[in-house]
Image 1 (cartoon, rainbow, N blue to C red):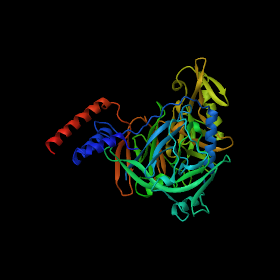
Image 2 (cartoon, rainbow, N blue to C red):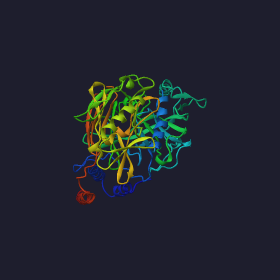
Image 3 (tube, rainbow, N blue to C red):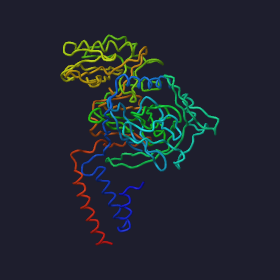
Image 4 (cartoon, helix red, strand yellow):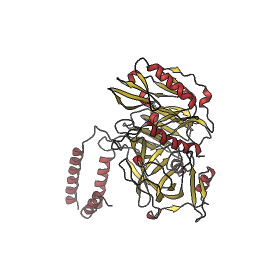
Length: 502
């Protein structure tokens, strides 16, 4: 579909010389993408959803996802962010991709707990047809893209998938396919294709340019990624393996081996997602545990109100069956079984004189008549290298409902019964800059208002380092009426120049 503005430009092109048309486009771009002290807008707010979700359902969603986790063996690239951590509204963050020729739009969940980009195929059996997120779902049709091609078994990228036990070869046309068996007994299957990814690259000065790059991704034929109440088109894996999009673009010299996100927890959510390193003066870093399939960190201890809990450090050690994982695809947060009870007991003991502890459907909750930040203690997750992730009460508590004028707040951390896995999901990742520095094998963070702009550095393979400013369009800038007036005045000047200098 051709936009009205494009049609108007074609009509104008028949009247005005080429230099005038270029001037109009540049003026429009400067107004939208950086002129008049306005910085690039990265956040797209999602309309609020009225339905509620119980913690039990969220635990079930995360449980299915953790089954998958445990069974799975040229500038700053910018993506818009939608969604929110709030489990009673959305419970996930997602972005929009454009793939194919001509490009089609797909909404995919931002997932640092998996490696590959997956999108439902037009022949998918079981893919949702509608979404409670008020977004239009699209299924990928390889035949509708002139740049789409199947990935053969002899392709080097297929071999990379085979080595990680994700891929295989079917008997039909030497086609690279995949089959996943998840921990809950379910599975998904499909095949790999290659096509063009269209994306925005932020250049110096917060100007943007559209770019394309060939990527390999999976198309889902059978399986069930998400339920209809919060369905998206697929999952955008940000893992560190070679099949992830960040690794593919990095190998082509298009993006650095580092990406960052800032997931907004308040006022409708949204946030920032870039391929590049967000630079902030208060960033702290901790090393990634080497040779792990996920983003594993070395958690050493937990402090509540400044007091280190008596938990055996071996509870947090990393092995094939335990460890601490950073996963943006998990809504809540999870503690190793042996650490959970000590954590909840410490919180309850600290606030028992001020609030009334209650159990709600197996969750430890509290009846509160004042602000949680005035009552509940600060929590610190202490990692190797001296880095601490500070959690304020809204980072580990979830508000449920109200009873007799008192708000019900529950511990947002859950436990995976009988397992030693600690998972840091959106509950604790929100309202923070999180940097995944794959090149230096570390993860960093700092608190940040994710509605504000950020400075991003991109160290490219060419040796160049680009610094750009990315973030929200300034609310203090010109109003739409003012901008329209400015555009009208400029157009009048251009029309006058056309008459004087034909």
